Length: 149
Image 1 (cartoon, one colour):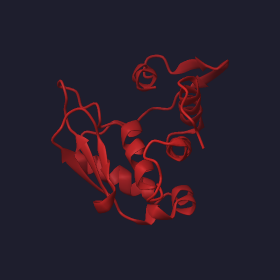
Image 2: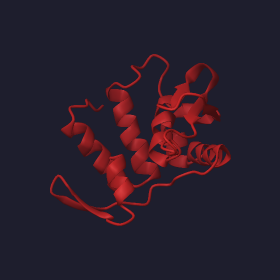
Image 3: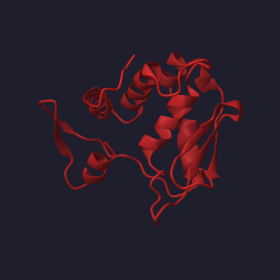
């Protein structure tokens, strides 16, 4: 999915599961402050607030010392984002941040990457990035055997 979005600036129309989609532009961030502003804005969206009560809990964003993954820490409501790996700011992108926000919106006893998480990630992506992105994500998950919902 990330590769499709990476190429979408030059090739925005993709064919997925027999449907032609024009991918929306995925946001990329330059600073932790811009990620924080984005997280704050997403959590105040009415569609997010209404569906997931945990959206009312603020999330802080900080740099992560490791380079290979972003991380959500539920007890302190913090998203930790690596700033650079191999001279690339791979984690400073919308899809990564929405993945971590989907963890934040979860119930406390939920399996971290289970069907509920997958469904919520698709719903959040659809609401924030657009229905085309949500469709692409859902289809990619189905094609890879991910249980949704």
